[in-house]
Length: 400
Image 1: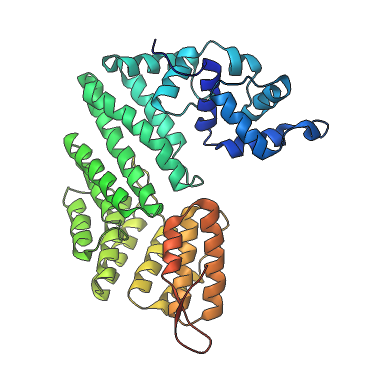
Image 2 (image 1 turned 90 degrees about the vertical axis):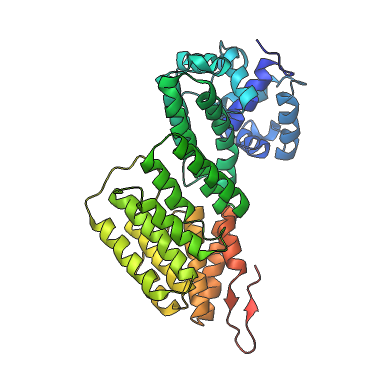
């Protein structure tokens, strides 16, 4: 067994915290919340707890009885599982790989089997593929910040990469397909996190893996998603070509066809071609009206997403009034996500372009608050570019 530089119990604290995507400060806050009223006056302040957690995770100090109990409550595990347990091997491979540990999601046997496969990839089988797909799905949630998803998905991708290089033939292709899906998801999170270079690099990885796996549907999906990286590309014609290339891979399921046409419409909007943009939006609406298909890939191509895309295009084409008409028919978004923050930012943009100053400023403030809450850096970038109509003089950039 490989040696690590901290005790197993300290490593377990760290992997449990990271598996829940908690920073040390968040764990400190949860320890305070876990204390009842009679205990809270004896619990250290959060700033002090952060330092204590750092010492615990380094194995330099053992939590006292009071804090050990609070840790068990925060993680919802008993003391034997947290500090003793029989999962030393499981803790070790999660600690070394950075692949998150989700307590209770897998059985001890599934964890042990996956650890053995990581040590020797030729042992991997369809159950190993299922483990990595399940753990990827667990972190594919709109309520997570894009930066959090990037940090948790990259170690998962690295593990998958090892398998599709070294696993035996029956499962090697399955891992390659999963790698392509994972890379595409990381690309989108970089896009949402305001990192265009990262978005393009991971999109290239997704397309390469899909081609290597010789899966035409997955390659079409990766191309269609690449064509949607409008914030990352300077060439609208290239976006159009990518979207068209996606459809040239054969008959696409309706929702994927709509996705391709959505993103082609974006390219035409950026190029200022109103007629082609409108035509592709109409075609995408027709595809969405067809019976719903079951595609194995994660993307939103709902009627709401279609309307949001129409708004995006109309704003780019300088038709803010048309965008506002669509927006005012839409119900208010109540769930704060990075996607909702970006939609609000585009709404503020539309109001600004229509010279509706008060609505633009108020919507921009809402978008800014939601973007800060959800980590929506793309929404922040959108807000920075809005020209708020002044009450008297020249246009000014919005200051948030």
